[in-house]
Image 1 (cartoon, rainbow, N blue to C red):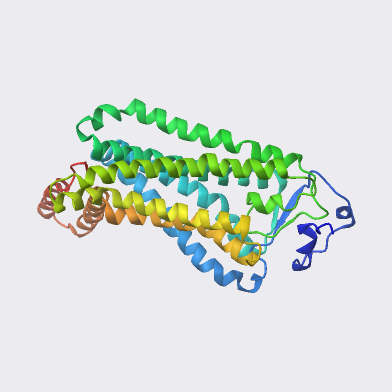
Image 2: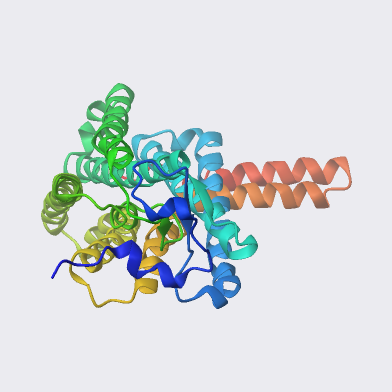
Length: 361
């Protein structure tokens, strides 16, 4: 027996009555309708509270990272250039989805133009691929810094860092480019309803009536060639890093050197674990409830964007010290009411600022 199209099975979830024009197939709908989180419509307002909180933390944290790196000359090194790229990627990923999601939760604004939907789809997957490439670049930086520290500055020069960054951006942009073009050519079913909070690739794919084998295989190929390959290179880098660490003479040296990699390892796990879990449940978790799929799809965009600046802010001494200097400077300016005390405050800040600004190996 032929399987009933997915779009017909979810039709009963919607408070929308479809017009007569939707009773025939169409290949280019003018708008899509996003459900938010199907089955949890009554809890949308409550769900928006943690979503909005995570978004606010992600925005403020990543902007703080960018400001600190820009204003602190000692942080103008490859590790922090890549960290700035990661912050920009997190800002774009969270901003490309959450404002629309919150408008669904708060104002029931569920319509999204067809072109806007494809644009959102492209930005999401493009910057996910870009973020994966950034992690590879950061792993390479840690590998050179630990395994060949004396040549770190001569190997990772500014021109090479620029070339690596450009390669990461171009790779992500090119490999994801077929997604919106394929989506525009697909013949869609008798509804334009997407049971999701944003235009996620797999959610849009399920509305297609035609054979989507090529698109499905292309998505799987990208998962193998981009994500799996990136994970392989990261694992290879850290295998060499661990070998170098274990060759150090004392336990104190081993712990200190490994501590320079802890932040990077934490953000890698925060990114890849939710992405891998969501991918596997989409491919193989056919009995997993739809609302769980949607929640996980939102989590793997919001949680890393929120955690990355927190992890680096807590674990990286240079960022922590610079943030403390900014806060202390502002506080002393507010409480300095006479010229003598103001001069003394700035002198103290200068002493504090000289501490801990030597780049990590």
